[in-house]
Amino acid sequence: MSLRIGVIGAGIVGVSTAEWLRRDGHDVTLIDRNNPGEPAQTSYGNAGILAASSIIPVPVPGLLAKVPKMLLDPLGPLHLRWSYLPKLLPWLVPFLRRATRADVEATARALATIVTDTVEQHKALAAGTPAAAFINDGIYAFLYTSKAACDADEWGHAIRREHGARVEFRDRARLLEDDPHLGEHYSYAACHIDHGWISDPGGYVAALAGHFRSEGGRFLQGEVDDISPRDAGAEISLGGLTHGFDRVVLAGGAWSAKLAKRLGHKPMLESERGYHLVLKEPNRKPPFAYMLTDAKFVATPMDGGLRCAGQVEFGGLTAGPSEAPFRVVNTRVRQLYPDLTWENEERWLGHRPSTVDSVPFIGPSPQAKSIYFAFGAQHIGLTTGPKTGRLLADLISARTPNVDLAPFRVGRFD
Image (cartoon, rainbow, N blue to C red; front, side, top):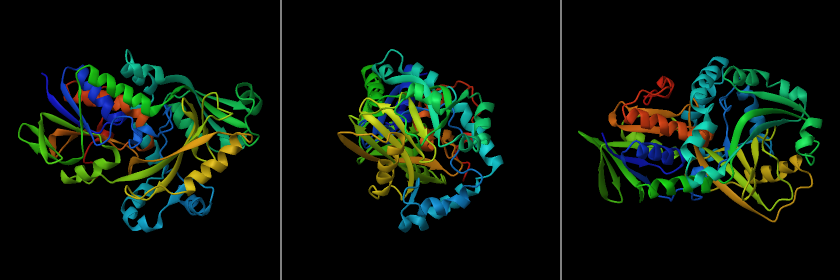
């Protein structure tokens, strides 16, 4: 049965969902205030990694003791707008309380079901479209300052291996075979095999959306004011006009919380503000993506230059960018390549939607059965996008998903 479906949010999750639903024969309208792939989209500015082994959440045992030092270190990976702290605390406290072994392992089990096949999922979504040209296969290397530093992360390595990750450990001599200009600061790596990256995330999402529209999908640009269930579906209020649908998918990232609350939910969602610095025309690029484990950002070779993406700042959705994260990246990238030069740079801030348990919402709202949630993937939204879209298409098209969706249930914090 063909349904009229509205998908709110034209980032990677929304575009993936819309395209899988269109392929199922539904009449799909994609809705966003920004065009797909534009810099205002969170999907524009990510590190581009198809991170098949990114199943370890940010809160891990011992994190709480490290937070003060991280905040006080001018070159640290964590930043906070102190004026925002009172608003942040109701989310931050339960978030940090999950830094236990049992919680980390439970989160890893859930995330493994939607990330481990990410490369295959992206290729399936992009096959036969211009977006396929943006997908690169390759290693994702976690760089360490020493073998001892890598060994200290063995618990995390073991969890990833338990869920199918193939990890190859390389010493400095082996690393230099692939990258002879690598700085002396890094001497060891855990190289995750069977990964990939997108050479231009904004261009990739725009290409997918362009294919969606060329095949009959529609795009409606505007700010969604409200969403409400009706007897036979749901209505979306957009710029004073009401649009009726049989089903609605809420995939608006960090901005989804406001609409979820209007439906009676308590999403416990916060913006994990992420930054990137693209170094244009650099004299050095890595052969594949690097995670700088001590600096907590990723250096990815992209069409537009060397993209350094990461850092974490808490400060809400409305404040502008801070200078500190850019300063940290600008300084610490020289530990990767001491002789690095570039012509100019692009600075960017985006909002990664993070739940208190680091697990996204995927599925129907118990408050409104015609409305489905697809948001909350924190910093792995690109990785999970196509799989999330396919799961939503299964649910809406009355197929049984091949994933246990219990950990992702909507309303679990209500």
